[in-house]
Image 1 (cartoon, rainbow, N blue to C red):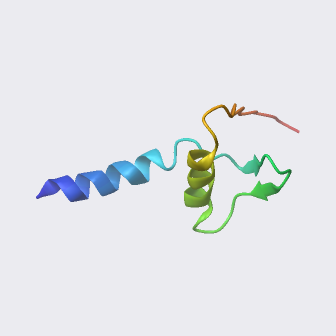
Image 2 (image 1 turned 60 degrees about the vertical axis):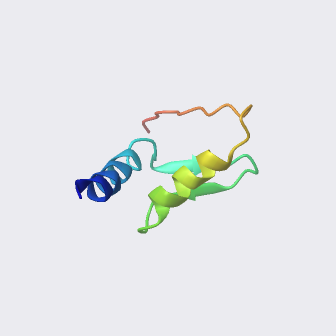
Length: 62
């Protein structure tokens, strides 16, 4: 009985791991975080990238 609940909790936790405050897509779009769907869209974008795509995470301070 706890299987589906645990799976939902785990998916919510893992969805928060990668998203950063902004995403620069391969086609040059700059997408800033905000809104309830940002994490889902961020992760869906990464999942849809071709296997040979290289993902770079940059941490910067201004």
